[in-house]
Length: 212
Image 1 (spheres, helix red, strand yellow):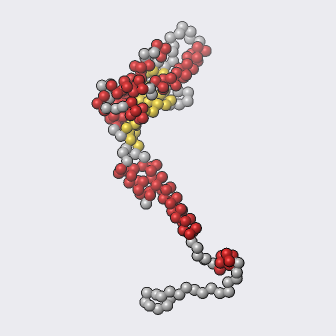
Image 2 (tube, rainbow, N blue to C red; image 1 turned 60 degrees about the horizontal axis):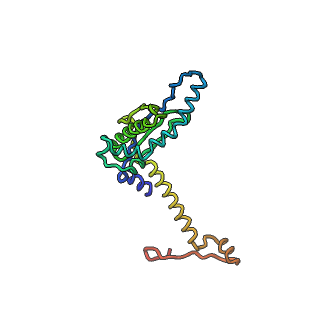
Image 3 (tube, rainbow, N blue to C red; image 1 turned 135 degrees about the horizontal axis):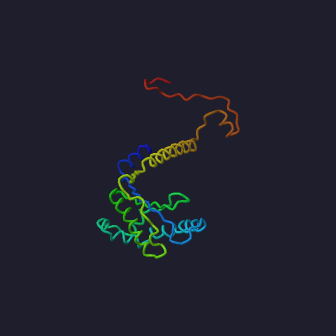
């Protein structure tokens, strides 16, 4: 029953959440005159160290406010809390310079618009800082091909199944603990430390009125 309830909640009641994703790359600074392998390696390390700062800027209140006031998102009436609540920024792989910026919402079009505007506003904000100017570049925009839907049905069904098993086991254990009857001669003898000389069956009346 709990499994069925979890399925019905996931498919009929719970809203589907859509996640739109964009990607951007932190480029290596090649403006220096030296082209030695050591200098190039240091530039890559510097770019990798920038990633944490870039992530913080993307998730900042300043960027969220710029998104809210933008032409593409102003119509949604979003708040800073709503922007930051649906935002997720991560580095794609450990050694990568590529960032994935995603936004989740029950409205797929809103998710796409906010995800794209988050990247645009982040690039504009980062360019305000001379040392980071032109270091964050667009790779992919959010469109219909990278918007994923998740209604959480699988997780809820599994949770419902587990809950059902736990409840069933709990009922069995409680019934066993509350059962004060003796199911064998040995259990009675062990409890009261006496010998049982005979056991008589319980005689009940059958539906036809005779003894059974």
